[in-house]
Amino acid sequence: MPSFVSRILRFILRLVLWTFAAIFAVSLLLASLVLLALGLLRSLFTGQKPNPVVFGRFQRFSSQPAWPGTGTREAAPTRSGEVVDVEVREIRDDQPRS
Image (cartoon, rainbow, N blue to C red; front, side, top):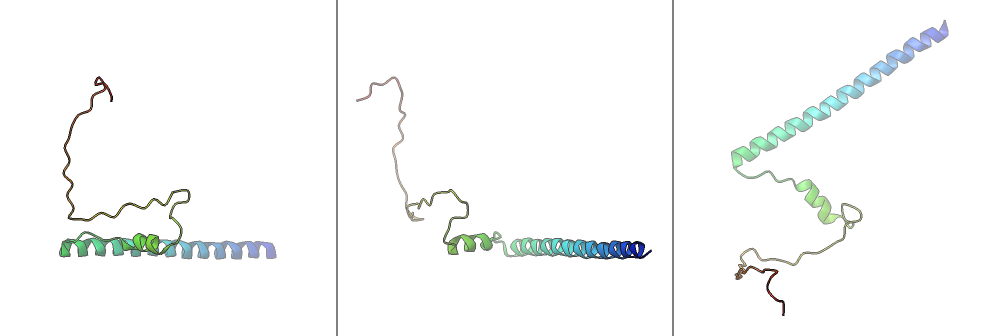
């Protein structure tokens, strides 16, 4: 008989723990959805694009690249007001190369 009571108590404890875990997961999901909606409303009212700064800050302050195996190629600095004027010409294969 004690094993039957212990089985019932284990089942009830397991049920309570699963219920708490489900409530916690649903509350995290709800909180993230509320924050997302508030961010979208803020961007609609201010007219500015949403700015996901979390990942940018992580990548800026981390010493290692975010994805292993990727090379750290540094791009040449560009100026936003610089205009490059080029002449476009078509290169054909039938022309002799010099």
